[in-house]
Length: 467
Image 1 (cartoon, rainbow, N blue to C red):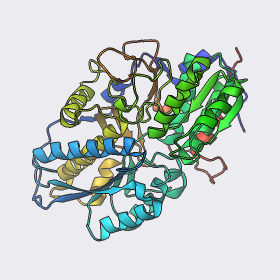
Image 2: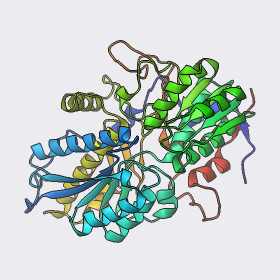
Image 3: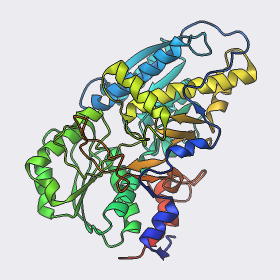
Image 4: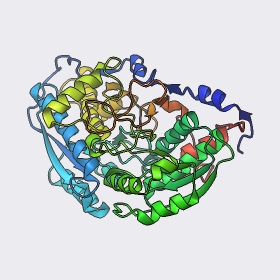
Protein backbone atom coordinates (compact mmCIF):
# COMPACT_ATOMS: atom_id res chain seq x y z
CA UNK A 1 0.00 0.00 0.00
CA UNK A 2 1.26 3.49 -0.87
CA UNK A 3 1.80 6.00 1.89
CA UNK A 4 -0.49 9.02 1.85
CA UNK A 5 1.56 10.95 4.40
CA UNK A 6 2.48 14.45 3.23
CA UNK A 7 5.40 16.64 4.16
CA UNK A 8 6.84 19.93 2.97
CA UNK A 9 8.95 19.74 -0.18
CA UNK A 10 11.91 21.37 1.52
CA UNK A 11 11.54 19.05 4.51
CA UNK A 12 11.44 15.99 2.26
CA UNK A 13 14.51 17.14 0.28
CA UNK A 14 16.31 17.67 3.56
CA UNK A 15 15.31 14.18 4.65
CA UNK A 16 16.81 12.80 1.45
CA UNK A 17 20.06 14.58 2.28
CA UNK A 18 19.98 16.76 -0.86
CA UNK A 19 22.80 19.31 -0.88
CA UNK A 20 23.19 22.38 -3.10
CA UNK A 21 26.67 23.37 -4.20
CA UNK A 22 27.98 19.81 -4.26
CA UNK A 23 28.94 19.67 -0.60
CA UNK A 24 29.58 16.24 0.75
CA UNK A 25 29.72 14.06 -2.37
CA UNK A 26 33.43 13.34 -2.44
CA UNK A 27 33.63 13.38 1.33
CA UNK A 28 31.77 10.08 1.35
CA UNK A 29 35.17 8.62 0.45
CA UNK A 30 36.43 9.47 3.91
CA UNK A 31 34.45 6.55 5.32
CA UNK A 32 34.73 2.83 4.76
CA UNK A 33 38.52 2.60 4.56
CA UNK A 34 38.54 2.83 0.78
CA UNK A 35 41.88 2.95 -0.97
CA UNK A 36 42.98 5.79 -3.21
CA UNK A 37 43.66 4.63 -6.76
CA UNK A 38 47.23 5.86 -6.72
CA UNK A 39 48.10 4.21 -3.38
CA UNK A 40 51.17 2.01 -3.37
CA UNK A 41 50.55 -1.73 -3.14
CA UNK A 42 52.01 -4.08 -0.58
CA UNK A 43 54.67 -6.49 -1.91
CA UNK A 44 52.97 -9.54 -3.37
CA UNK A 45 53.01 -12.72 -1.31
CA UNK A 46 53.97 -16.04 -2.83
CA UNK A 47 54.78 -16.95 -6.41
CA UNK A 48 53.10 -14.81 -9.06
CA UNK A 49 53.06 -16.03 -12.68
CA UNK A 50 54.26 -13.61 -15.34
CA UNK A 51 51.78 -14.75 -17.98
CA UNK A 52 49.75 -11.94 -19.59
CA UNK A 53 46.47 -11.02 -17.97
CA UNK A 54 43.84 -10.89 -20.72
CA UNK A 55 40.91 -8.49 -20.50
CA UNK A 56 38.05 -8.41 -22.98
CA UNK A 57 36.67 -4.86 -23.24
CA UNK A 58 33.44 -4.40 -25.19
CA UNK A 59 32.13 -0.95 -26.02
CA UNK A 60 30.75 1.09 -28.91
CA UNK A 61 33.61 1.80 -31.30
CA UNK A 62 31.32 2.83 -34.19
CA UNK A 63 27.83 4.35 -34.60
CA UNK A 64 26.41 7.39 -32.80
CA UNK A 65 27.05 5.62 -29.49
CA UNK A 66 30.82 5.88 -30.02
CA UNK A 67 30.58 9.27 -28.31
CA UNK A 68 30.21 7.18 -25.15
CA UNK A 69 32.15 4.10 -26.21
CA UNK A 70 35.42 5.66 -27.29
CA UNK A 71 35.99 7.41 -23.93
CA UNK A 72 35.32 4.05 -22.27
CA UNK A 73 38.13 2.38 -24.20
CA UNK A 74 40.44 5.33 -23.52
CA UNK A 75 39.78 5.16 -19.77
CA UNK A 76 40.42 1.42 -19.80
CA UNK A 77 43.56 1.78 -21.88
CA UNK A 78 45.00 4.47 -19.60
CA UNK A 79 44.41 2.35 -16.50
CA UNK A 80 46.06 -0.65 -18.17
CA UNK A 81 49.05 1.47 -19.19
CA UNK A 82 49.46 2.82 -15.67
CA UNK A 83 49.20 -0.62 -14.08
CA UNK A 84 51.60 -2.12 -16.63
CA UNK A 85 54.11 0.66 -15.96
CA UNK A 86 54.21 -0.66 -12.38
CA UNK A 87 55.01 -4.15 -13.63
CA UNK A 88 51.41 -5.28 -14.08
CA UNK A 89 48.95 -6.82 -11.64
CA UNK A 90 50.82 -7.86 -8.47
CA UNK A 91 53.88 -6.44 -10.17
CA UNK A 92 54.14 -9.38 -12.59
CA UNK A 93 51.16 -9.83 -14.91
CA UNK A 94 50.93 -7.26 -17.71
CA UNK A 95 47.42 -6.47 -18.96
CA UNK A 96 46.57 -7.27 -22.58
CA UNK A 97 43.26 -5.99 -23.92
CA UNK A 98 41.05 -7.60 -26.54
CA UNK A 99 38.39 -5.21 -27.85
CA UNK A 100 34.97 -5.76 -29.38
CA UNK A 101 32.54 -3.32 -30.99
CA UNK A 102 29.25 -3.33 -29.14
CA UNK A 103 27.56 -1.86 -32.22
CA UNK A 104 27.50 -5.38 -33.68
CA UNK A 105 24.21 -6.01 -31.83
CA UNK A 106 23.09 -8.13 -28.90
CA UNK A 107 23.25 -11.55 -30.55
CA UNK A 108 26.70 -10.88 -31.99
CA UNK A 109 27.88 -9.52 -28.63
CA UNK A 110 26.82 -12.69 -26.85
CA UNK A 111 28.75 -14.75 -29.41
CA UNK A 112 31.77 -12.49 -29.00
CA UNK A 113 31.77 -12.91 -25.22
CA UNK A 114 31.74 -16.68 -25.69
CA UNK A 115 34.60 -16.41 -28.18
CA UNK A 116 36.60 -14.20 -25.84
CA UNK A 117 36.31 -16.70 -23.01
CA UNK A 118 36.47 -20.02 -24.85
CA UNK A 119 38.97 -19.16 -27.61
CA UNK A 120 40.94 -16.13 -26.39
CA UNK A 121 40.78 -17.34 -22.76
CA UNK A 122 40.22 -13.92 -21.20
CA UNK A 123 40.67 -13.56 -17.44
CA UNK A 124 38.29 -10.60 -17.03
CA UNK A 125 35.45 -9.06 -19.07
CA UNK A 126 34.71 -5.32 -18.85
CA UNK A 127 32.83 -2.56 -20.66
CA UNK A 128 29.31 -2.56 -22.17
CA UNK A 129 27.34 0.66 -22.67
CA UNK A 130 23.83 -0.35 -23.70
CA UNK A 131 21.06 -1.29 -21.30
CA UNK A 132 19.85 -3.59 -24.05
CA UNK A 133 23.09 -5.59 -23.94
CA UNK A 134 23.95 -5.98 -20.26
CA UNK A 135 20.91 -8.20 -19.41
CA UNK A 136 21.85 -10.51 -22.28
CA UNK A 137 25.56 -10.65 -21.44
CA UNK A 138 25.24 -10.97 -17.66
CA UNK A 139 23.72 -14.49 -17.61
CA UNK A 140 26.21 -15.65 -20.26
CA UNK A 141 29.10 -14.39 -18.13
CA UNK A 142 27.69 -16.38 -15.21
CA UNK A 143 27.35 -19.48 -17.38
CA UNK A 144 30.95 -19.13 -18.59
CA UNK A 145 32.24 -18.34 -15.07
CA UNK A 146 34.05 -15.29 -16.40
CA UNK A 147 34.66 -12.57 -13.85
CA UNK A 148 32.94 -9.46 -15.21
CA UNK A 149 32.94 -5.80 -14.20
CA UNK A 150 30.43 -3.91 -16.31
CA UNK A 151 31.30 -0.23 -16.64
CA UNK A 152 27.81 0.81 -17.80
CA UNK A 153 24.75 -1.03 -19.20
CA UNK A 154 23.02 0.47 -16.19
CA UNK A 155 19.53 -1.06 -16.40
CA UNK A 156 17.91 -2.20 -13.13
CA UNK A 157 16.69 -5.23 -15.09
CA UNK A 158 20.17 -6.82 -15.03
CA UNK A 159 20.22 -7.58 -11.31
CA UNK A 160 16.47 -7.33 -10.70
CA UNK A 161 15.57 -10.10 -13.16
CA UNK A 162 18.18 -11.21 -15.72
CA UNK A 163 20.88 -12.08 -13.17
CA UNK A 164 19.16 -11.84 -9.77
CA UNK A 165 21.76 -13.84 -7.83
CA UNK A 166 25.06 -12.76 -9.40
CA UNK A 167 28.32 -14.47 -8.60
CA UNK A 168 30.76 -13.46 -11.33
CA UNK A 169 29.09 -10.25 -12.57
CA UNK A 170 29.63 -6.82 -10.99
CA UNK A 171 28.80 -3.31 -12.21
CA UNK A 172 30.41 0.01 -11.29
CA UNK A 173 28.01 2.50 -12.89
CA UNK A 174 25.07 3.89 -10.95
CA UNK A 175 21.82 2.00 -11.44
CA UNK A 176 19.53 3.29 -14.19
CA UNK A 177 16.54 4.24 -12.05
CA UNK A 178 18.77 6.68 -10.15
CA UNK A 179 19.07 8.80 -13.31
CA UNK A 180 15.37 9.58 -13.56
CA UNK A 181 15.06 10.12 -9.82
CA UNK A 182 18.12 12.41 -9.78
CA UNK A 183 16.59 14.53 -12.53
CA UNK A 184 13.32 14.76 -10.58
CA UNK A 185 15.11 15.82 -7.40
CA UNK A 186 17.09 18.37 -9.39
CA UNK A 187 13.89 19.81 -10.87
CA UNK A 188 12.17 19.96 -7.47
CA UNK A 189 15.18 21.77 -6.01
CA UNK A 190 15.72 24.14 -8.97
CA UNK A 191 12.27 24.77 -10.45
CA UNK A 192 9.63 23.76 -7.87
CA UNK A 193 6.85 25.74 -9.61
CA UNK A 194 6.77 23.79 -12.90
CA UNK A 195 3.45 22.10 -13.58
CA UNK A 196 3.13 21.16 -17.27
CA UNK A 197 5.71 18.53 -18.24
CA UNK A 198 6.74 17.32 -21.71
CA UNK A 199 8.95 14.28 -22.22
CA UNK A 200 11.27 13.10 -25.00
CA UNK A 201 13.07 9.80 -24.49
CA UNK A 202 14.68 7.15 -26.70
CA UNK A 203 12.25 4.32 -27.33
CA UNK A 204 14.10 1.51 -25.57
CA UNK A 205 14.94 0.34 -22.04
CA UNK A 206 16.87 3.40 -20.87
CA UNK A 207 14.29 5.93 -22.05
CA UNK A 208 11.32 4.01 -20.64
CA UNK A 209 13.07 3.61 -17.29
CA UNK A 210 14.02 7.30 -17.11
CA UNK A 211 10.46 8.38 -17.87
CA UNK A 212 8.92 6.06 -15.29
CA UNK A 213 11.25 6.86 -12.42
CA UNK A 214 11.31 10.60 -13.07
CA UNK A 215 7.51 10.61 -13.07
CA UNK A 216 7.24 8.49 -9.92
CA UNK A 217 9.61 10.74 -8.01
CA UNK A 218 8.22 14.05 -9.27
CA UNK A 219 4.66 13.04 -8.36
CA UNK A 220 5.82 12.95 -4.74
CA UNK A 221 8.15 15.94 -4.86
CA UNK A 222 5.85 18.28 -6.80
CA UNK A 223 2.25 17.03 -6.58
CA UNK A 224 -0.13 18.37 -9.22
CA UNK A 225 2.15 18.20 -12.26
CA UNK A 226 0.66 17.10 -15.59
CA UNK A 227 2.32 15.30 -18.50
CA UNK A 228 1.21 17.27 -21.57
CA UNK A 229 3.35 15.57 -24.23
CA UNK A 230 5.34 12.36 -24.75
CA UNK A 231 7.76 11.74 -27.62
CA UNK A 232 9.57 8.45 -28.19
CA UNK A 233 12.14 8.73 -31.01
CA UNK A 234 13.98 5.60 -32.04
CA UNK A 235 17.55 5.27 -30.79
CA UNK A 236 20.05 6.96 -33.14
CA UNK A 237 17.43 9.25 -34.65
CA UNK A 238 18.89 12.14 -36.62
CA UNK A 239 15.77 14.25 -37.36
CA UNK A 240 13.88 15.49 -34.29
CA UNK A 241 11.79 18.11 -36.11
CA UNK A 242 8.40 16.44 -35.64
CA UNK A 243 9.12 15.80 -31.97
CA UNK A 244 10.24 19.39 -31.36
CA UNK A 245 7.16 20.92 -32.97
CA UNK A 246 4.92 18.54 -31.00
CA UNK A 247 6.61 19.53 -27.74
CA UNK A 248 6.36 23.25 -28.45
CA UNK A 249 2.68 23.03 -29.39
CA UNK A 250 1.95 21.53 -25.93
CA UNK A 251 3.42 24.66 -24.29
CA UNK A 252 5.04 22.88 -21.29
CA UNK A 253 6.82 24.55 -18.41
CA UNK A 254 9.46 21.85 -18.51
CA UNK A 255 10.90 19.41 -21.05
CA UNK A 256 12.52 16.25 -19.64
CA UNK A 257 14.91 14.29 -21.86
CA UNK A 258 16.99 11.14 -21.55
CA UNK A 259 18.21 11.36 -25.16
CA UNK A 260 21.97 10.80 -25.12
CA UNK A 261 25.19 10.79 -27.12
CA UNK A 262 25.02 11.89 -30.73
CA UNK A 263 21.23 11.88 -30.52
CA UNK A 264 21.27 14.59 -27.85
CA UNK A 265 23.63 16.70 -29.91
CA UNK A 266 21.25 16.51 -32.86
CA UNK A 267 18.25 17.24 -30.61
CA UNK A 268 19.65 20.35 -28.94
CA UNK A 269 21.02 21.83 -32.18
CA UNK A 270 17.67 21.38 -33.94
CA UNK A 271 15.78 22.67 -30.88
CA UNK A 272 17.89 25.85 -30.95
CA UNK A 273 16.58 26.67 -34.42
CA UNK A 274 13.03 26.53 -33.11
CA UNK A 275 13.76 28.63 -30.02
CA UNK A 276 12.70 25.78 -27.74
CA UNK A 277 15.07 26.69 -24.91
CA UNK A 278 13.58 30.20 -24.74
CA UNK A 279 10.08 28.83 -24.15
CA UNK A 280 10.58 26.19 -21.43
CA UNK A 281 12.92 24.81 -18.81
CA UNK A 282 14.89 21.72 -19.86
CA UNK A 283 16.07 18.88 -17.61
CA UNK A 284 18.11 15.92 -18.84
CA UNK A 285 19.60 12.73 -17.51
CA UNK A 286 22.51 12.60 -19.98
CA UNK A 287 23.12 15.98 -21.66
CA UNK A 288 26.74 15.89 -20.52
CA UNK A 289 27.13 12.15 -20.94
CA UNK A 290 29.50 11.89 -23.91
CA UNK A 291 32.76 13.62 -24.69
CA UNK A 292 32.66 16.94 -22.80
CA UNK A 293 33.80 18.68 -25.99
CA UNK A 294 31.07 17.05 -28.09
CA UNK A 295 28.64 19.68 -26.81
CA UNK A 296 29.35 23.00 -28.53
CA UNK A 297 29.45 26.57 -27.27
CA UNK A 298 26.00 26.97 -28.81
CA UNK A 299 24.49 24.77 -26.10
CA UNK A 300 22.21 27.01 -24.01
CA UNK A 301 23.03 27.85 -20.42
CA UNK A 302 20.66 26.91 -17.63
CA UNK A 303 19.83 23.37 -18.78
CA UNK A 304 19.76 20.85 -15.93
CA UNK A 305 22.50 18.74 -17.47
CA UNK A 306 22.69 15.23 -16.13
CA UNK A 307 25.85 13.16 -16.58
CA UNK A 308 24.93 9.73 -15.15
CA UNK A 309 27.24 7.89 -12.77
CA UNK A 310 28.10 11.04 -10.76
CA UNK A 311 31.00 12.19 -12.92
CA UNK A 312 31.94 15.34 -14.78
CA UNK A 313 35.58 16.17 -15.36
CA UNK A 314 35.26 19.31 -13.19
CA UNK A 315 33.37 17.50 -10.44
CA UNK A 316 34.28 16.57 -7.76
CA UNK A 317 36.28 19.79 -7.82
CA UNK A 318 40.07 19.79 -7.74
CA UNK A 319 40.42 21.50 -4.38
CA UNK A 320 38.08 19.00 -2.71
CA UNK A 321 39.06 15.80 -4.52
CA UNK A 322 42.67 15.62 -5.74
CA UNK A 323 42.08 12.12 -7.15
CA UNK A 324 39.89 13.59 -9.87
CA UNK A 325 42.32 16.43 -10.54
CA UNK A 326 45.15 13.98 -11.11
CA UNK A 327 42.99 11.73 -13.29
CA UNK A 328 41.85 14.63 -15.49
CA UNK A 329 45.40 15.92 -15.91
CA UNK A 330 46.78 12.50 -16.86
CA UNK A 331 43.86 11.76 -19.18
CA UNK A 332 44.17 15.13 -20.94
CA UNK A 333 47.92 14.64 -21.36
CA UNK A 334 47.38 11.12 -22.78
CA UNK A 335 44.42 11.81 -25.08
CA UNK A 336 44.41 15.60 -25.61
CA UNK A 337 40.79 15.78 -24.43
CA UNK A 338 38.82 15.70 -21.18
CA UNK A 339 37.36 12.47 -19.75
CA UNK A 340 33.68 11.56 -19.63
CA UNK A 341 31.80 9.42 -17.11
CA UNK A 342 32.50 6.44 -19.36
CA UNK A 343 36.24 7.17 -19.11
CA UNK A 344 35.96 7.22 -15.32
CA UNK A 345 33.93 4.00 -15.20
CA UNK A 346 36.31 1.96 -17.34
CA UNK A 347 39.36 3.37 -15.57
CA UNK A 348 37.91 2.67 -12.14
CA UNK A 349 36.86 -0.88 -13.06
CA UNK A 350 40.45 -1.98 -13.65
CA UNK A 351 41.68 -0.35 -10.46
CA UNK A 352 38.84 -1.93 -8.50
CA UNK A 353 39.91 -5.33 -9.83
CA UNK A 354 43.56 -4.54 -9.05
CA UNK A 355 42.61 -3.65 -5.48
CA UNK A 356 40.64 -6.89 -5.06
CA UNK A 357 43.54 -8.99 -6.42
CA UNK A 358 45.99 -7.31 -4.05
CA UNK A 359 43.77 -7.84 -1.02
CA UNK A 360 43.15 -11.47 -1.95
CA UNK A 361 46.86 -12.04 -2.47
CA UNK A 362 47.62 -10.72 1.01
CA UNK A 363 45.16 -13.24 2.43
CA UNK A 364 45.90 -16.38 0.42
CA UNK A 365 49.24 -15.75 -1.30
CA UNK A 366 50.15 -16.39 -4.94
CA UNK A 367 47.75 -15.54 -7.72
CA UNK A 368 44.29 -15.69 -6.05
CA UNK A 369 41.51 -17.68 -7.68
CA UNK A 370 38.24 -16.06 -8.71
CA UNK A 371 36.51 -17.13 -5.50
CA UNK A 372 38.99 -15.12 -3.43
CA UNK A 373 38.81 -12.10 -5.77
CA UNK A 374 35.00 -12.14 -5.71
CA UNK A 375 35.08 -12.16 -1.91
CA UNK A 376 37.19 -8.99 -2.01
CA UNK A 377 34.91 -7.30 -4.57
CA UNK A 378 31.74 -7.91 -2.56
CA UNK A 379 31.31 -4.96 -0.23
CA UNK A 380 34.41 -3.27 -1.64
CA UNK A 381 34.91 0.48 -1.55
CA UNK A 382 37.33 2.58 -3.53
CA UNK A 383 38.12 6.28 -3.81
CA UNK A 384 37.81 6.92 -7.54
CA UNK A 385 37.80 10.04 -9.75
CA UNK A 386 34.02 10.31 -9.36
CA UNK A 387 34.20 10.09 -5.58
CA UNK A 388 33.58 7.13 -3.32
CA UNK A 389 32.36 3.97 -5.07
CA UNK A 390 30.81 1.17 -3.04
CA UNK A 391 29.96 -2.31 -4.34
CA UNK A 392 27.00 -3.73 -2.46
CA UNK A 393 27.47 -7.38 -1.53
CA UNK A 394 23.82 -8.38 -1.97
CA UNK A 395 23.50 -7.42 -5.64
CA UNK A 396 27.06 -6.62 -6.89
CA UNK A 397 25.84 -3.16 -7.93
CA UNK A 398 28.08 -0.12 -7.65
CA UNK A 399 26.74 2.97 -5.89
CA UNK A 400 27.99 6.57 -6.02
CA UNK A 401 26.23 9.65 -4.73
CA UNK A 402 24.22 11.25 -7.55
CA UNK A 403 24.71 14.75 -8.91
CA UNK A 404 23.27 17.13 -11.49
CA UNK A 405 23.75 20.81 -12.29
CA UNK A 406 23.01 23.67 -14.66
CA UNK A 407 25.00 24.08 -17.87
CA UNK A 408 27.13 27.18 -18.23
CA UNK A 409 29.75 28.61 -20.57
CA UNK A 410 32.96 29.50 -18.77
CA UNK A 411 36.16 31.13 -20.02
CA UNK A 412 38.88 28.68 -20.89
CA UNK A 413 36.66 26.00 -22.41
CA UNK A 414 35.29 25.68 -25.94
CA UNK A 415 32.22 23.87 -24.64
CA UNK A 416 29.72 24.35 -21.81
CA UNK A 417 30.54 22.98 -18.38
CA UNK A 418 28.95 22.77 -15.00
CA UNK A 419 29.23 26.00 -13.00
CA UNK A 420 31.35 24.40 -10.31
CA UNK A 421 31.80 27.75 -8.62
CA UNK A 422 28.09 28.56 -8.48
CA UNK A 423 26.80 27.31 -5.10
CA UNK A 424 23.18 27.61 -6.23
CA UNK A 425 23.49 25.12 -9.07
CA UNK A 426 24.98 21.70 -8.39
CA UNK A 427 22.57 19.36 -6.61
CA UNK A 428 24.06 16.29 -4.92
CA UNK A 429 22.06 13.43 -3.45
CA UNK A 430 23.22 10.52 -1.28
CA UNK A 431 22.68 7.45 -3.43
CA UNK A 432 21.11 5.55 -0.52
CA UNK A 433 18.27 8.12 -0.59
CA UNK A 434 17.20 7.34 -4.17
CA UNK A 435 17.76 3.58 -4.47
CA UNK A 436 16.03 0.62 -2.88
CA UNK A 437 17.90 -0.58 0.23
CA UNK A 438 19.71 -3.94 0.42
CA UNK A 439 17.50 -6.99 -0.01
CA UNK A 440 14.39 -5.00 -0.98
CA UNK A 441 12.08 -7.41 -2.85
CA UNK A 442 12.72 -7.63 -6.57
CA UNK A 443 9.96 -7.64 -9.22
CA UNK A 444 7.90 -10.80 -8.90
CA UNK A 445 8.74 -11.15 -5.20
CA UNK A 446 5.55 -9.80 -3.67
CA UNK A 447 5.09 -6.95 -6.14
CA UNK A 448 4.84 -6.47 -9.89
CA UNK A 449 6.54 -3.11 -10.30
CA UNK A 450 9.13 -2.76 -13.06
CA UNK A 451 12.00 -2.34 -10.59
CA UNK A 452 12.72 -2.69 -6.90
CA UNK A 453 13.31 1.07 -6.87
CA UNK A 454 9.82 1.79 -8.22
CA UNK A 455 8.20 -0.39 -5.56
CA UNK A 456 10.33 1.23 -2.85
CA UNK A 457 9.36 4.75 -3.90
CA UNK A 458 5.66 3.93 -4.00
CA UNK A 459 5.74 2.32 -0.57
CA UNK A 460 8.07 4.62 1.33
CA UNK A 461 8.16 8.12 -0.18
CA UNK A 462 5.59 10.55 1.23
CA UNK A 463 4.03 13.16 -1.04
CA UNK A 464 5.20 16.72 -0.58
CA UNK A 465 2.45 19.17 0.33
CA UNK A 466 1.18 21.21 -2.61
CA UNK A 467 2.65 24.68 -2.79
